[in-house]
Length: 175
Image (tube, rainbow, N blue to C red; front, top):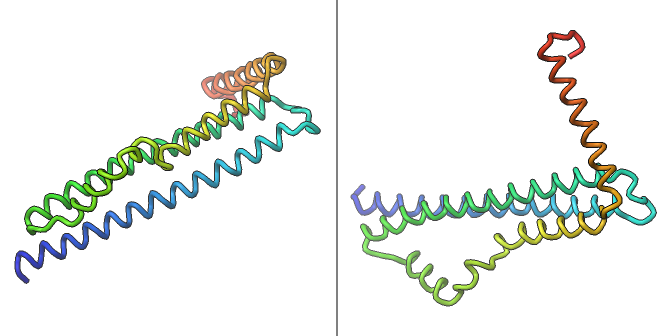
């Protein structure tokens, strides 16, 4: 096997690796999208008028959990962007050695015609839209009347956790 054949095989492998990373990112985004749609449905169920928002703490914790999930989604997207950028650097270096540059030319064409897509892509926009949606939904449905209930319930929860931690440190057999 010649050096050029080896480089060509490596080039094919790197291209396949990029394809796999993109597929993994797409699958992860689909999972997060599904989680957020299901979560938004759960919030809608908890906030429906006939439910009377019986437990604002449950609603608040659910909204917080969904917002956290969305932040994790956005962070994962950023990780994949960095990973793919590193993979493309390797591909570009190998293209220089091979004397061909189809991937670089393709990227240059895409960038020239779709510069705005860097900042307004679905991948970047959806987590932010869900976060905004959760914040608005939370603000509208919780309102000022429920803050006292939420704070009182959180205080009870924190007191219970503190008691549990104290029992662990004292060696209580009920831990």
